[in-house]
Length: 265
Image (cartoon, rainbow, N blue to C red):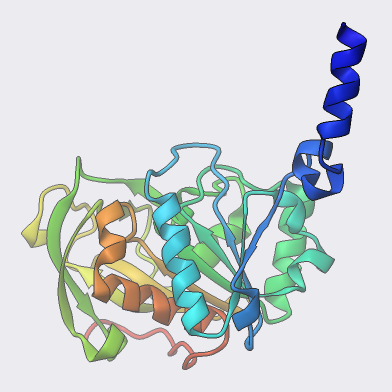
């Protein structure tokens, strides 16, 4: 009876090549928007070895939609094996979207460093700053590591600097998890936006609290925003436009990052 059942199952089974991940156990990178890829491809990387944000699916969906509007294809993956010279050469930019922990090993780290030195693009969202603490180069790339955050979601005003607010916006009310960082990155980056600590509880950085910035100090283009914890935030048109601007810069489709500047200049 068992032999007959096995024979029936073999005859009903579809060819393994239709389901390579099931057949081989290999991780799959989900490719999207291939038909609308006039400007190349972006990798959205969401691997987590620490806290995993509920907003990751919404972050991926939003980044996919924004990329499509810019003529970019998207590959979403959590497979560190993509981080070799040949794999990274496919991408105009790499987005760390709410990654946590030591997501890459030494070989992958070295490949990513080469990719950035030769003009690649990096975009970090929220807990991209809670990533790679044992990797000093990455600490400089992301700009500043996460230190802590006040409890829960809180509301404050975001102030955009140097005319870098999306669609000309200068001030924006936001509700999100508001990171404190281990250092103020302003001396090495161009600050895109700050948050007003006087409007919420638990800020630890003082009057100058950057929350988004960009730089070209790693040889390529790097852009980071500390916002993006809350699922609801991804429906906010200002936040979506903020992410769009970061994606454009990281992919080399937007204006270059300004030189680091002091507050008020």
